[in-house]
Image 1 (cartoon, rainbow, N blue to C red):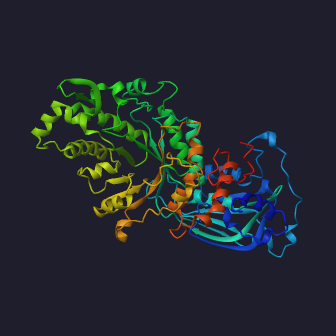
Image 2: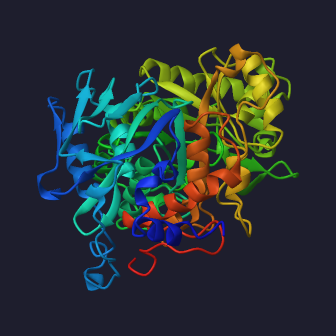
Image 3: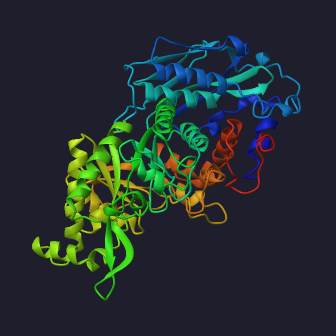
Length: 539
């Protein structure tokens, strides 16, 4: 019974009882406040329906064009032309004779209070309100262009296809604002190269689910696909394929622009001093020479060598280019999983540590390195995020450092991080690459990120979180399927009220959201057991 929502929806729509149903079960993530009535309006002349606005912002113009194409999806024929006319369309019901019918809806007015912000940012205002009245007047009111995009997505889900060329929309009042400002997905393009098209599909899915940060883990040990104008040898030597498996400046600009028009920030991660073996293929002098027990070089390379001045000259040039390439205020500096054994085997590093009164304290050496990288990024007027090991290893951090929590016992970690006054992000419970059989979305959905011991002030330091898709076993063939709709559970947890935490009650909406993404051309996988979406066979 719990999996039959799509079939039940078809039955309700054409049974003659359509007007007694409130369609709030089509909303995902669920808004903060919804007051929906049984009364409804109809949209008849689809070609004449308009979204009216005075805004001249390119973000708004792009969003209106996009949602005018999305809103009136009647079946799956636009996904695959061979399915045109192949679907059962029941006899049209005369809804206008129903006492709940209140008239026609001919347009919706989009009101945007703010100016034309160019790029989404951490403090962007995504608040919006929707009011659809019995007199046929409908408004979407947003404080910014970013809130307007979120409002258009919700409005598009309110339209119910009741037959060819006719849509129903309930009388409704919605007030909505995200619970957290940072709602992201981490995409790893080093372990496996992800194509431009599949990254754009990821951004489409994120927009549908109101997620707003693409955390681009662009390089790692395995490959360096970022094409640097300053150091082209990094990708030429470090990428899987220096021609086909790289991201050129033009590629990156295209992805950033595609994301910008959907209200999504693109935050790049250049992880160091560990996870940098691919850097060394083009610049071997950056990496630490490891030594064996005989006191001789053993032929292996370790993390970035933190004692070489030329390393920081290189980093300043590279991060200057990164800061120019990515408009996003934050750069993720990584800092996780640094293996100290190579550092401690190197005589030059041991001598350096002794000279600087570090003894053999790796935390102090890492502090030395991280501080220099942070100073470089700060001089570029950028903010930064680090993985939790930087905090755990007692590296001295500035008060404005954001700590990204990913290890187990995350409740204790968040308590410690925020007690020190640092802002935090959470990913620990949302590693979507760690698949498990069954309905694992329930676990993601029921995890409250504020479930740690701390004051209200500490919990306000939690900026949000991210679903992570590490790509050891993910490439362009399965990235979207692995992510969605499981990431939708994270999306609602980070957007909707904390009290909305019952998976059984969310299940019908979760399944319908899967179908919604399929209707929008995304190859998402079933994550909630048996069921049916109309567009299963059209993709």
